Image 1 (cartoon, rainbow, N blue to C red):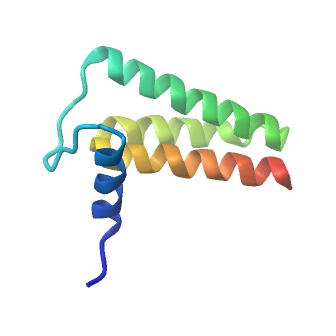
Image 2: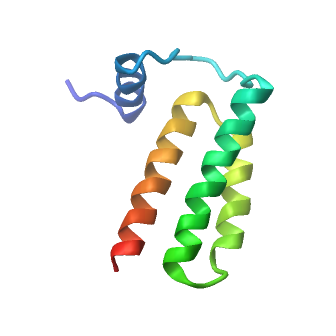
Length: 91
């Protein structure tokens, strides 16, 4: 039986002692601020890697996405942003 991406992220979070939510829930203010800082840091790395202003719009979209998603999707977005940043920096 194939495991879904949602289940894989849940397994990842459980392995690292994170709470796995199955219904959307707004994080507390401190956690939300930390996540936003992490997203901004990743976008800055991407911007530095590209050497262009292309990322301003991406940053806006990621911040909007952050406000709308569950913790599981947020973790996946952070992982994908990190991978993309490292890939572009290597080009």
